[in-house]
Image (cartoon, rainbow, N blue to C red; front, side, top):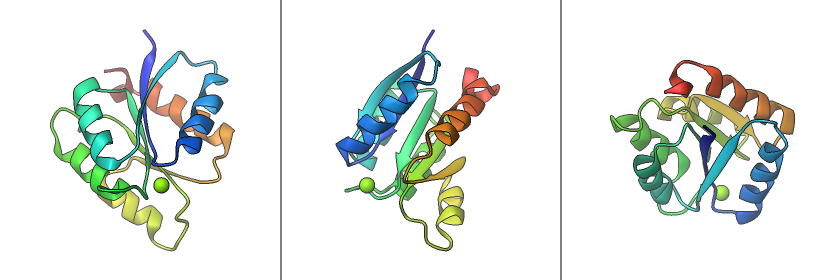
Length: 129
Ligand SMILES: [Mg+2]
C-alpha cells in the first residue's frame, strides 16, 4: 500500500518541487495537495494521509493554525506534521513545534533531509497506522 502524503503550500511551484524530490525517493507514495491551511485541514480529515507537509505561510489559515487544528482533531491528531518553511527567524522552529508540528524543515528544501525525515516518520509505529 502506498503512503499518502498531503502537501500543503500556497505556491504551486513548491508543491511540484516536493513531489519531484519525493518521486525519486524510492518510497511508494501518493500525493494530495492543498493550497491553503483551511483546505489542508479539511483534506486531512477526509483522506487521513500518512503524513502532512505544511507550509507555514498560507492564506486563510496559516501553517501554525492548521497544525493546531490537526492536532486538536481526534481523527488527525496522530498524523505526523512536518513544517516546511522559509521563515528562518529566531523562535520560528519553537513556534511551529508548539503549534503541533512534529518536525521543522527550512526552505530551500534539502532533498536528502526531506526524504530522510519522511522515511523516519513513515517507518515509525504511528506512521504505519
Ligand atoms: Mg507560503
